[in-house]
Image (cartoon, rainbow, N blue to C red; front, side, top):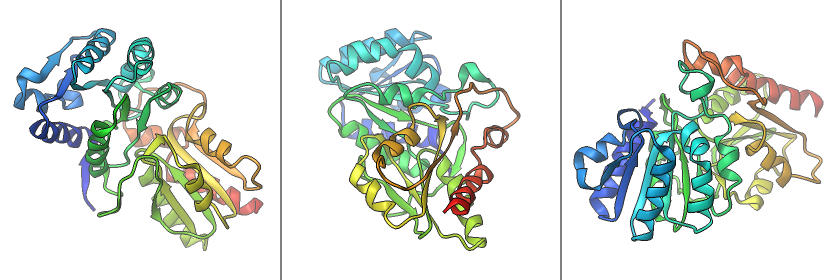
Length: 311
């Protein structure tokens, strides 16, 4: 099993893009060695802008660079990228459809040691609600590279959600990456599990455990929470007994609510695994927090079993 760090893969992808396109520029809010934008700085110091702890200014400055024809990538922790600079993103970037790519690092509960102030559980909801925004939530390191390239090719604002910790590779080798199109990670007949981001690993573990109980579970990864092909979602749940949606973000405004909306009028039950309208907290590890909030494979398996018991 291959394991990669999403932040490191992101930094490498930025450098590769920079080699290919001189219009790629990168901005940082004093966290370059954490977000790994420092890789781009080392290779292209003249196209790298250290803005200090001033996320709002960084975002506005990126908009100005975009107006000159540059493709600007901004970088900071997800909680600051989506929250502290929200007004600038909405008013200056999204309304004008400027070509700015916002990378939110250490997303979800992955910054386990720093607690609620540094853990982004609302960033998906915030960025998904912004018109003209494309929201990427890659599941592993290799997909980060594909997401960064796809975001650079989009004409308009994008948000890229990155985890802090190492994750196992699960995106199928050779699979076609298309914005808005779900990717089947595992085939199954009984229950469809939709996921995005790093919870794909936990969903696959839960599906394996369910299989030992004679329950056939499909696991479907959503590369972009926005846009999402509604017809593809409906096709993937056809014939299933129920649906489970799992995500490392708030239940409010996440993929669970979106899938529930897409399946409105359907008789299929939908269960959600998400952060249930609470803040995060400090812990000794990311895994400890996932278990605490019911986001691990055991929590997902409980929802799968509930679907089957009520079917």
